[in-house]
Image (tube, rainbow, N blue to C red; front, side, top):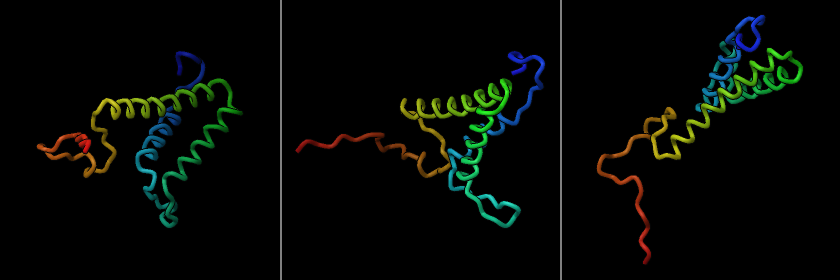
Length: 115
């Protein structure tokens, strides 16, 4: 970002936000304890993050807008690569170990017989 706006300081807050959005995409029902008391699901915190990004995009200066767009592009690039790998037939790690395990002698796909 400093290459586009040399006088603006480089910050990683929006990059951390994109990593949080990727985590919320993978584990939407993960619960965090807010103030060690209130259980809050990560998907609701991600919704607040999206609202904050939209607000920063609307009222922020050019530097903030570029940081938000770079962060959102980073998140969508994560989703795009993830779905391209899944469409190509590769295994995508989504945190659940039972889904990715396939027995060695079982076929990946079996066709139904036309009887």
